[in-house]
Length: 208
Image 1: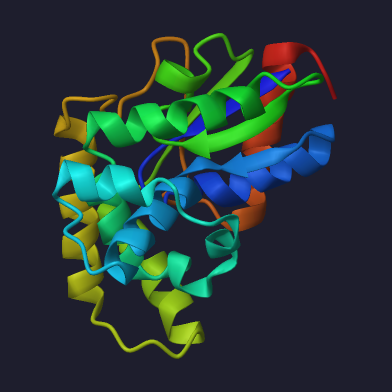
Image 2: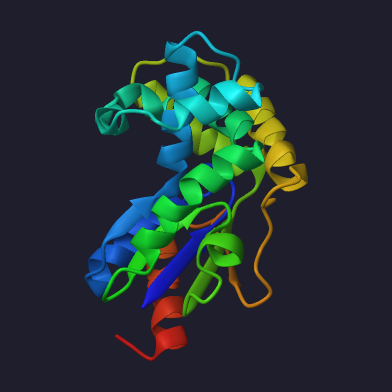
């Protein structure tokens, strides 16, 4: 069984995907982390994330980079959004994601184009959304807990800019697959969102 969880950043899709993987006993891949690693590698090399050649070169990042805590920062998230617009980068990472999705027994993947590009045959497709204010508040609290100083308004502006880039990019833009189930987490707490997602997935594949 393949479960595809798509949606904009800070919508809760990562938390939901991890919970689904644990519930159904499936491996999980945060595909956004791959793009964050590419963006981080570009920065480490002193390159320009808007340059296709520099971004493609960064796709050869060392596996150890996936453990870099800086990958979760807002700065790296912005870099990931910028490198992801390059078709060459998306193609370079496609096979890695595809192999994970089609492994025996299935998998759970979350990202921006899982249900539309990476695994369009997924038995379960969730498109997780939340309003910009709700997402900004969540990210603000996360960063406060990490001791990072950032303004709520700046986070909201960054999220809106990323949404626009993801929706309007020429290659694999962010949108819900026709057969995806929309889950709005704007007014849902963590546990309620997970419960709703498990119910949707269970109904879709007739499993508990």
